[in-house]
Image (cartoon, rainbow, N blue to C red; front, side, top):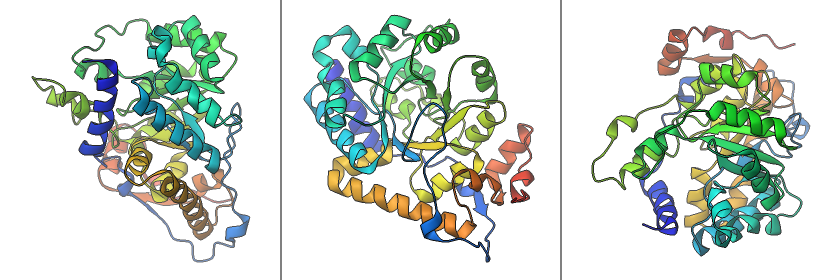
Length: 351
């Protein structure tokens, strides 16, 4: 199977298998504030992030790149959407273009379509410093995502089987690059233990990319003759992963993994996320309803965020971390088992 065919398989399987929606956000309920002393016009949804000047708290997370004209057209559409909505955008892994110059067009198109936007490059943890520098230069990236995809690789018939030395390679890249480095999972979550390892590095951002969204074990199993089904329900749900990472990582935290709507987003911000990334939900709208509908949907997301922030009395995204919310169900059980106190979120005090 060619790379182009595999990439199109990924897109089609992502659309057909859907998202598991097991991100545990449904176990969070805000405590209503009947006297919020707020106004919609006074809400600020611009995130406060040190090394990245993001205009929007939402970004288009990595989906695909390489694989021919179809993915080039998809990336071109998404870049225009990012330009029109003020969002940052991440491309898929650029390794294909580093190995084959014919693949570059599906990546470089995003900078042509969005010359002044915030773009994230993307490589796997097997990358060298030189490859990282080349990936940044290719799209004039404002940051570089390094994705961790052990489960996907293990499930992929032709995937990697050796993951030694990844942390050292990530550290070397983060030290040498002139742009921030974002370490992200690919849908199975980042634990407290992993965040602890990254804490002492030069990495600027962790994207938790938790369980509950596009499931690459399900996708790769569609391509296998003998299934590895034990990975299909593997991983840390997104809501839990945010708590895990925030407990030890004192830099920027992004949340992604099955985030569907503004209510999921506002719960992610309450748990401590600085920005949120969507991939599967945007992909579905882009492929099935088109560019204009996706732009309209994103503007509606912004409006919904402002409405809910007003109801909670939160002037900005940081204020949301001071809004009490009750955590129950599986998320509460998970957090207790991991040594966290769910009641602490229900009893925060606003200044």
